[in-house]
Amino acid sequence: MKAMQDKIIAIITNMVLSLAIIVVASTMGSDVTGKDEGEQNKLENVYDNEAEVNVSLLEKDELFVGVAIEDADSEEKAEEVVDAETDVTGTGELFKDVCNVEDFVNVPVRVINKSKYEDMFLVNVSEFLNVRAEANAESEVVGKIFAGQGGEVIWQGDTWSLIRSGNVEGYILNEYAWFGSDVEEHVASKAQLFAVVDTDKLRVRNKATKNSATLGMVVQGDKLEIVELGDEWTKVIFEQASAYVATDYIKTEHIIGTGMTIEEEQEAIRAEQERQAAIKAEEERKKKEAEEALEKAIKNSGFAQIVQTSAYSLSEEDAYLMACCVSAEVGSSSYECQLAVANVILNRLKGGYYGNSVRNVIYAKNQFSVAKNGSMDKYIKNGPKPMAVKAVKDALAGNNNMVGFTNFIYLPCADFSKYSEYIIIGSEVFYRR
Image (cartoon, rainbow, N blue to C red; front, side):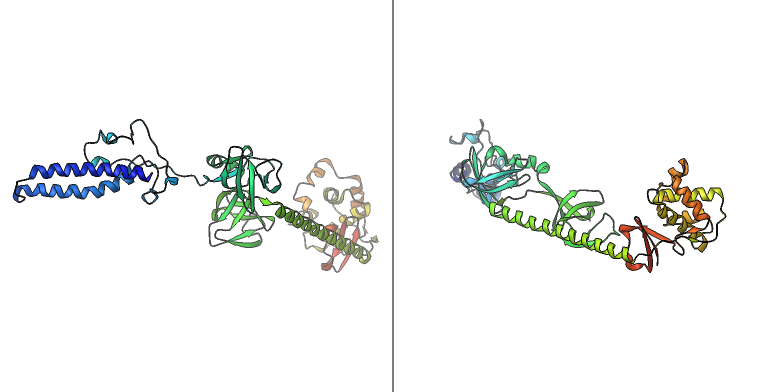
């Protein structure tokens, strides 16, 4: 390539010098003052243009495709393009249609942008591709490259190629990978999408809302694997768990992952086994702790005893509404539990804190969830369960097994430390604060 450039420069230089000699010859014997002073200036301009032509030709000649001046000496960084109109073997035929030096200055530049994936590969597999110590299928497996991963091509052959991916270096079969421009074509569909933090600091939250808890902070340039990209919030992996970041403060980028050596894979398997064992141990601990707490709670639980109290005089409509509420809340529980819920409603009515009517008590804000979520509506429409009707009638008659109790909660949700007194019936805890 350097030799070709030198040859072109020499041709141009000879043309310019020949033109200069002609001009000089035409002015011999003339006084270089007065009207001939212009001819002297032209001669000086011709010599000045010599350097300009040399530089312009190197910068703009179409023979050199996408090669900067500083790289012109490197044959490895340029590719010669020769066509029918470009004869680099002749002596001046290349410039047969050029009339003057200025034509060279305006020769257009053709630039070919090199892909950032030019020397990379991306595996074309659904699970993983073996990396071998030598270029044959019987050679030792030294590592694995999983789907969405790739790396650097050291040498590419017809069947096998030498690659580097993370800490693993070895040979892969070409048929199971994309190379160069093919990588750019498939990277968006195969490589993992990451959120790149595009602000100084960004909160990572446990839910997709500004009011949710902050799990941690990430800083400019940090990368988080994306689970789901959203318009306002993006679901990511943070410390091996799902979390959320605000989409406005991230950029997205497909990142080609790297493989691992066999030793790294074994270490990763061991670490995952330890992690799973720790999770299982923690679950067992919590389960045992809950069982012990329940056993203790049952021992400390009071006993429901039916006490005869004053009867209530309510309308048939109120009694019907009570029976529907009892059916929705504990319709599958024992009669004792259903009687207890009916008495909680009456105790609240008697206390007056939740309203002065059965309807007000049942539909009080944030109290009986079945009144808000629609569970009670089907019983209002189709009628309450028979056992619930009996429980309500008995409660209205003054059979009270929850004297003074105005609250109950589902057993797994109970916090016994907050209750001054409680009674467990089936799956419900009736308590006083």
